[in-house]
Length: 215
Image (cartoon, rainbow, N blue to C red; front, side):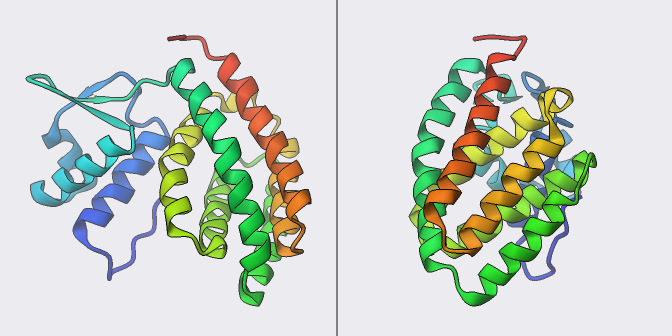
């Protein structure tokens, strides 16, 4: 469940709530949805939801269909393959820069998070929540908003893939890899962070290749 801060805008709240529903497949890929339905699900008025829809469309999670309304973007093998191709390069840069630029407080937070991730065991929902927190810490630690913006939509698409293929995931191995990534960044070990990241991307590529619906 997304926890919302009182000081964020209604449009941001709508975006976070709807993104969670899209990422966790509560809004089904390929499904046609009405703006009113999204307003009801978010519990927020028309103008903020329309702003959220524009962002989600730009991020590739929703498609605006002329005279038909909105469609939840399908998970396509061709799209995900290209996303991983780009993500591998950009995320390598992010983990290296995060390793170099993280503050002492951020390094401490990453160490603590690594332990929590590794202890997640087989609790899928806890792992996904901690994985999102890891993304947020890496984004803050790299101190490069352009890099963060470039990766944001790709990460959302990959989280949809994790949810879709969750029964095929070796969660304990995945937790070890993400914990190792967090520890490497905390230790300033850029090369170690890249090794852990590359293994995570390989796992995602395997999940992409296992998709039933191909396009």
